[in-house]
Amino acid sequence: MAEENTQLQLVTFQLGKELYGVDIMDVKEIVKVQAVRPIPNAPYYVEGIINLRGEIIPIINLHKRFHIQSVVEVDEDEDGEDEGGFIILDIEGNKIGIIIDRVARVIGVSTGEIKPPPQMLNGIGTEYIQGVVRQESSYLIILDIRKIFNARELQKIISPAD
Image (cartoon, rainbow, N blue to C red; front, side, top):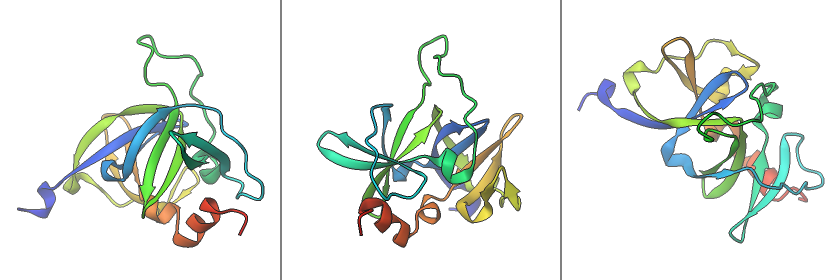
């Protein structure tokens, strides 16, 4: 099997004006927006925590983390779907939620289509980007969630009091 023919399944979502994707294997679930409780002494990009079926999950605001302005309107699309919410990720056994403006869809991308990221992309450093895929009239930015949240940061987020 050739490396170029390997398919990567991505959950895509919108943050600001850009379309992003994360590997579907890192996604536990997608949930609707719910009340987030702030936590003291957390990093600036941590909105707080939610209780999801008895499990406490920290919620990260990637808008703050990457200095992205949210431009998606609060009202729903005509079909009532694609609204914002949280994507719950599993990073090395730790569950973390990220706030998204709008869920897009799950797509398959051939690894041969993935190009290296440009040096700077809307304030997001290339170290956080796994690659970029050309779409019809735009780009899909594939995030590397393991680099967004390194082990030391994960520890801070999971137990901010330490």
